[in-house]
Image (cartoon, rainbow, N blue to C red):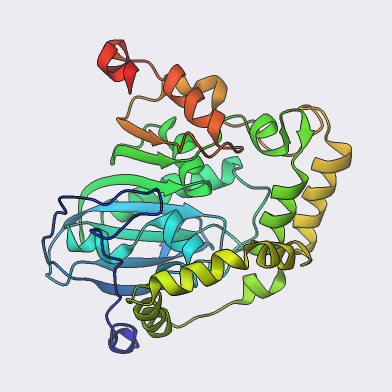
Length: 329
């Protein structure tokens, strides 16, 4: 009933021909002009009594399109607003739809508008749900039956687990900054508990406020016209100057009780793989992935995701990896 209001203000995409934060400017940008419309809070059934909430972004022109499915542990209430973290981790939906894709942004059980209760991150239930969401998306009237997975960090880690299941509709994955051995890459990074990252991650994403956060799509779209306006260079500089204060603020927040219990295990009780509640990750099984993939990592950004990128690239087999030109990449 609110579809007209959800799309009252068009979502504004960032320009692809502007100066990039990595220090370069694209010379050629593909434009198709298909526009963007939103089907907000669609329900993807994953169990008899549980459905996950999905925002589905589609080209304005009716049709059946390949779907980009994204699955996260986070609230997606501000993702499409162009606020740096969300926009970076899912990309910009209006860019995807403009080029002929449907973009489906889901949140895991127990988070935000999704039903059910969640266990620890990246567990087998997450993988089951993700696989069912792929099958659900593939048969929707706006999808042509082909699904790809795309995203950064959590949005990139979950697809590796799903790819081991070989879902029929899954055609490719594109992962940015991933982890493959969760104990070593996330919890005991370099043999030391990842205090800074985990405090920041928990405080920024898993507080009661973030679970309850509700931002109407029309408000997200309105914000996108500010964040992607000519004022962008100004507000980016202002934000960058305050990043330390923003991070300290996040780290001072108290996460919900289950997250605190996982944190206590990671920091105190789970100092070995056997006692840690975090799932092991797909590192030992990466050679079983058959679907085509792209993995990306900024070589100058030395953090917990650096080694997952290398691990994936080195262990996934197949003829393409025997090509010296591929190895050089």
